Length: 197
Image 1 (cartoon, rainbow, N blue to C red):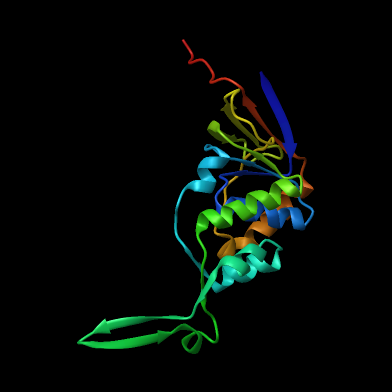
Image 2: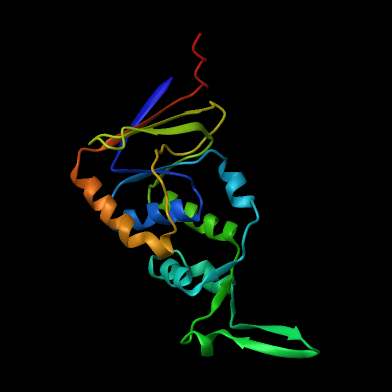
């Protein structure tokens, strides 16, 4: 069985960058679809980095997905380095104009972003295998992949993701251009395609 979905922007990867990009595009009225090779359970349970820089903390809060982070995260304002038998405090706020970092695990950020996207009707397709993007230099690029029938989630599609804290303005410009062209599409099969003979 083959399914096709139209969208303005397709994002490959439901990591923090892809999910946050989808959320920011949604806030700007731009439709997107996210394709992820792993299950929702896997991405929400995989333990990764646990420190967020101030810019990321600010962006999550400003975009409406930072409430749990503010409540459960820990603001970290410095470290101690010990050498030659003495402790030396590195005070982040005094060295960075008042900025600090937040101790809040990446998988918790992912949980918050997945919940926000799904609550807003966002389309995320989990467990898509062999995702591929075609015709990027045309007005109607496409993304393909296959999905097993046992997997469940919302429909989605594909594009590349960038670090949202550093490249979001460029991503916005690219997505604005994309929204003026005809929408691309994404398709996937429920079964793995048979190899060519």
